View 1 (cartoon, rainbow, N blue to C red):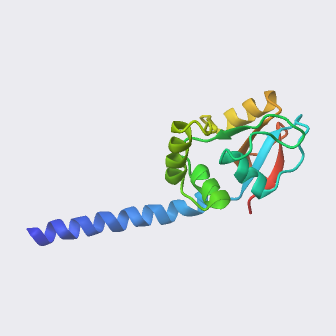
View 2 (tube, rainbow, N blue to C red; view 1 turned 60 degrees about the vertical axis):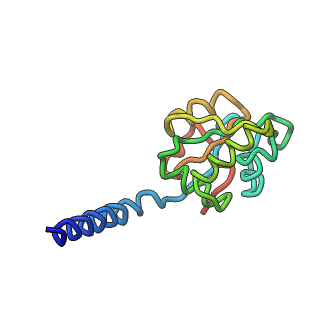
View 3 (cartoon, one colour; view 1 turned 30 degrees about the horizontal axis):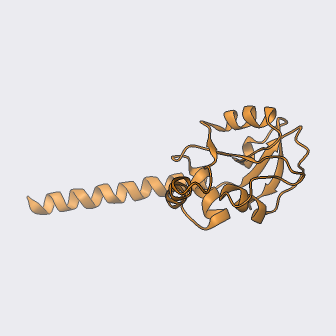
Length: 148
């Protein structure tokens, strides 16, 4: 009986690993950093994006207040974004922002529910920046930086 439970546990682990492997290509697409199409900002470097998303810089070039936007913690884009710009997982960034907020050294990026919400918010706020899957870019936003 004990062998059956051990086998069942290994089978479940194998199935979970297989499901993750099948989902990986969908989550590994190219990300871009965007702003509203009418924003005066035309380009940001990776370093500038990291500085904004980690609260080290609060303004964009030209003096506009930066409004960084985050997708939900469960989104694969968020995980990939923080891995690419900070070399940290989304969970590590959450801990970072908890510490920064507690000590009064910064405010975390504003969380929005979806890519559609990012495009809607960025269109009305000149300082809004966000990361999106490259395939989600349309005429409502312009690309500031590619994270390829």
